[in-house]
Image (cartoon, rainbow, N blue to C red):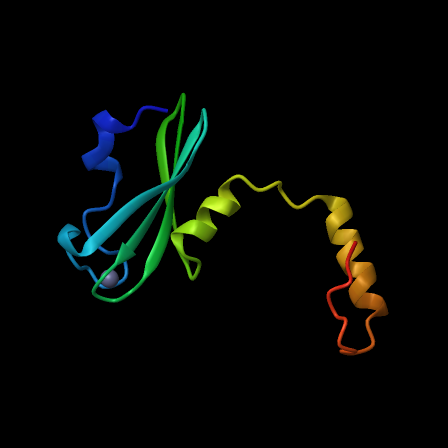
Length: 110
Ligand SMILES: [Zn+2]
């Protein structure tokens, strides 16, 4: 996905939390594939962090920002991660259903 031409239109010019101008924002690409780009934006003034997901399809360009408490490195890891499957959810349900309290070995998932 080539976003360089649309850069100024897509990337936020102000912090969505405090309204601080672009000079107080840092931008770091955290992921990119054929259809989407993720950019991590942090604000020096209010310390907010937002991940912007930019998707391009036949309808145009869609940008969605999500406030986050992860850092840029963690956001990079999430971008390439395998999605949670139905089996993962069932395993977690069964684990929690059988869980009777902390015993010192609370992270024994397979
Ligand atoms: Zn801010």
